[in-house]
Image (cartoon, rainbow, N blue to C red; front, side, top):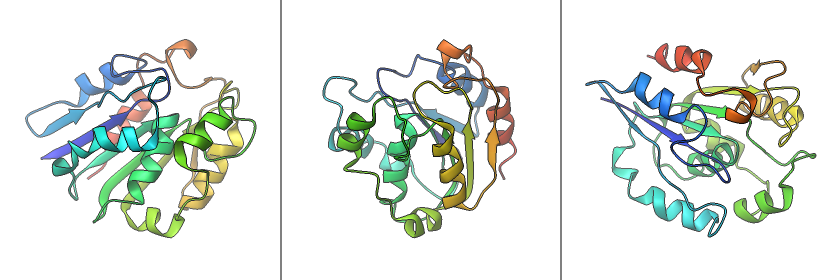
Length: 185
């Protein structure tokens, strides 16, 4: 059984952006999909999000796939620093890693406890990495995606003129992401 987690970002929820569409496309007898509801923006903290996620830890195994959008990608990095054994794949979409400009830099810094990451631990805790970013993201500059790709040792999936890859930018579906998730063995 494959398990996919989709992590939303700030001021979002499981019904936002392309999350419901992706969940519907992936769910099958062989694949369960979770889109946890994290407190945001009120009560938004790493400890609060980890508290919500604790209820799902029993579903994490070598077949797990994580997808993090925006702050959900930042959260995913912190999860990969904490999991006890490697998961199958981690997908990052418009994720901030500390390179300015980031519209909510101070909030993201406070949420994450800074932007220092244990890249060795992160890289050892997933077998496959994918990074998506656009050149006109109004919240997280492209250099975040470029550096994240470099740190993970993967090629950036660059999508020109796609904004923050969210509903505001016209992304209520995300076929390219679906194809890559579906192609993971």
